[in-house]
Length: 293
Image 1 (cartoon, rainbow, N blue to C red):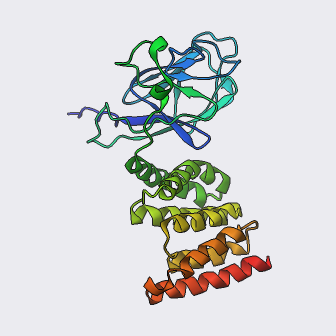
Image 2: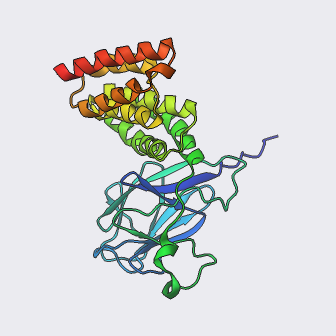
Image 3: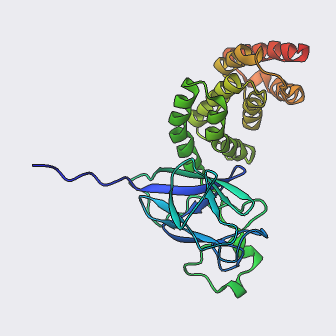
């Protein structure tokens, strides 16, 4: 006897815009210039009620309301409606978003607010399910809570598997697009004094090193230095060695930031153990090599 097909896993959907995120909660997410929309785009090419994204636990679908300038997914104009998949490039007016999706943990509640940040150049409406009408919404109502750190850690872990496959194919630029927002979110949290778990810090530094090697961009070495500067502790020796290995391939390492980090470490040398002091010595050698490039 055939067994019933297992139901699709519940998903979390969100839009990514210049390193920031906007949650797509189950239901209808209205997009347009009108203040009655959930996602308000201050863009002359956007209609007052331009489109909506219909979200369920298993899927998200964009519907164009017959707008003059249309909705585009991966460069193709949407005729009517179209399902959205993780990684899709969504364009509404001049604004370009990336669709993201991950499996929702079984214990997560449907009402959980896991992300809702104001997007640069846009106005994001608050949760209006129990809110007053548009005329009574104030500026303070538009200040939405930041993405929870636990969610950001979860995102990095899930996206890491995708990035590993892309990196194995030699597609560094694509891996960078997959990981950039998650890595930058972790750095932002560290700079705010909300230290991520050690396993997350190590994972972030490891992927930054991989991206430096795959893209030959020094900014990912800078990322690792910035991350551990924010944490005020020495880089583990394996990450220092990783930076030595990729230095020959990258240009534009931020020497000023590196020296500031070393200065910070020198102020705390007496509290470090032998392994940490050795890592600092290796980092000093790395600084001399960067200065010679």
